[in-house]
Image 1 (spheres, rainbow, N blue to C red):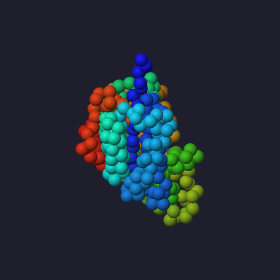
Image 2 (cartoon, helix red, strand yellow):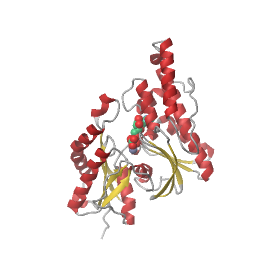
Image 3 (spheres, protein in one colour):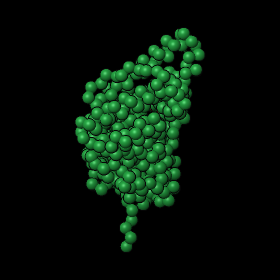
Image 4 (cartoon, rainbow, N blue to C red):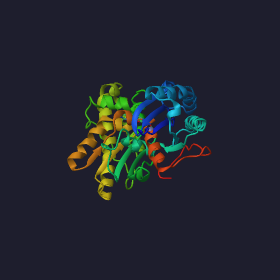
Length: 340
Ligand code: KG4
Ligand code: ZN
């Protein structure tokens, strides 16, 4: 008799995207993401509005994922959900829904760490193209910036992280100074393509070891724009592309320098990228350039870079294979350190 594939439903609701995905033996059948327009006018994610929008989206998003996967909920073998880190109210919506559905279907519930899931996104759709263990992953998102030593799917160690702002936050904050809509990262990236990355220089941040710091960069960017605008009110408008290109170049250099230092110290030559900022063209091309230095470089497809539920489902599959299941009593965690 033919073996049935393992169907896992993933649910992600840690920030402002409500997402559901279905994987069959790790292959993506559906990957549905509903963004939230309600935050646009506020220049950032408003937690209370986010949890209300998750409540509205969760049922249609899960329905749509099952419809696209052409399976019914009775076919599912397990449900994986994001336990943290993230906005507590948002996490609670996805978590409560996952618990209720798993209980109703009488199938296992699997809790997932969002940061671990960003890294394991490399394993969606099979392991051929995935990085070999051990590898170093640079995880860059709106809330986190980490260099992680990945020994196996379920064994990860944080070697360095940001002391203040995350890389995505740095992009979003400079975008705000430039009057660009939230989230500003993709827009800065787009305008940077047209500008000169060497036009403006910013001081190098001071952070020990493999840690990062981005708050100083944001401040010097703000001061540069403010001071130049006093001399010429059209400065920002005239130099928009060069400002974006220069600040993007600086952020990318900070990230790559620390990643290379960690690679040298650990003698690990397999490098991977994860998180929303890995969609950035400048960062992707700087990573590609490392191939010439003898590194194996892994960059996830765009759809798996930003928040999605396929990454939650693949992490769920690794835990499913090990029989690591969660109980309904485990609460969502706004802070959830990797490896804890
Ligand atoms: O991983 P993610 O989708 O959500 C979090 O877990 O935070 O990352 C979102 C972050 C935002 O800060 C956004 O501005 C940034 O990723 N981002 C980008 C680009 N696309 C998304 N930053 C720079 N360039 C991009 N192309
Ligand atoms: Zn994320």
